[in-house]
Length: 162
Image 1 (cartoon, rainbow, N blue to C red):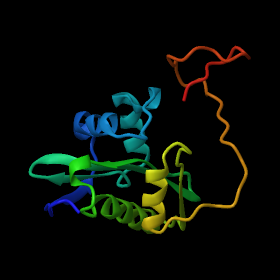
Image 2: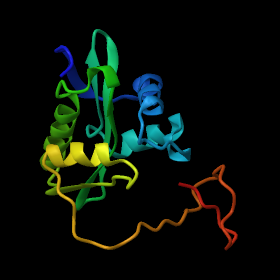
Image 3: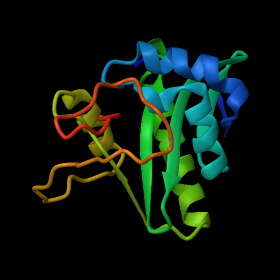
């Protein structure tokens, strides 16, 4: 276990973007795309007010999580903490804060996605109480006409943004 650290958790704001993006960029297993730009995170924070959080220690952001819902199910994304501070309960605390905020909004369940290539992350989520669903589906995606993306067109001619 790493040395204990005093930290606090608060709602994420757009002013946190640079520090949050730095953490995401340094985290193995977090794959960043067109939806992780400042403008797209601003939209996410507005849509999911009071559901996304950062952990701070000594005046800097040391952990972060995006949380949202569509009215029925919550979703967690991009949970990470500074590697040197892992093992201090920051990730668990951020997760619990999200689950409590979702419950306050009447959301009873929360889902997340874990990449097959990231068994360490799967272990963390099971450790904090998530369980793997018995399903056999694949995630499919189709872009809307909300704006351009930087990825090349799919074989059907439509953009294939992540």
